Length: 275
Image (cartoon, rainbow, N blue to C red; front, top):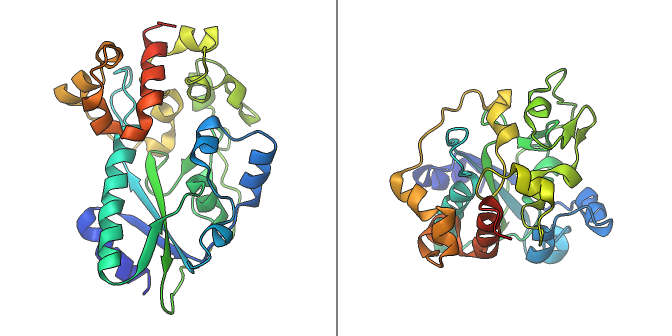
């Protein structure tokens, strides 16, 4: 099986990006985890840095990406988690299609972003976000581990410099100064500290979006081709912070995924300044 055949399976599921690569390890991510530079969410999910060791039966990684549209700036809702949850269910359908063809396939518990970069797919900008041409930084990622007979891999391109040049729009837009000429600094990033308990005062002072921060993505030129879409009335109602904190959280979890329950509540607490 090669990527063209995978694309045939992906097409009816509206999955535009797929690549077959050999199992890769991510030594840079493993080093970052050992040094405490990996966020708490990655620790919670117990991600594997060495795909070959974690999935010794697999001889292929299937890298998948889905672009999504932004919500209007200032609407107070991040579209990422809704898009990521939708993409998760699409890849469940792809897993079913592969297994119907007697292909062993599992969702890989690995650091998706790091593996994409090791495979030479996408580049990281000044704001530390992965950008994949032609989609930009607004992408949801998934990786499946597969066992295929005689796989044909896509070539892994050489990693070249793909910096932001003199562009500083994300640096100028960041409300907490987390981006400067040397890059992104997690200790000052709103999204990185939304789930601290208690959150720092500077997070409370600047929090304006449920489940994260959108400032750098809203202004990134790599996303200029995307047009903002208004969230539906049902989405706004489900993700209303007061409704979430009242205990009526089921509609929100349907949108963003049950695994986001704790983060959803913490984010609503931060957004309403109820600590």
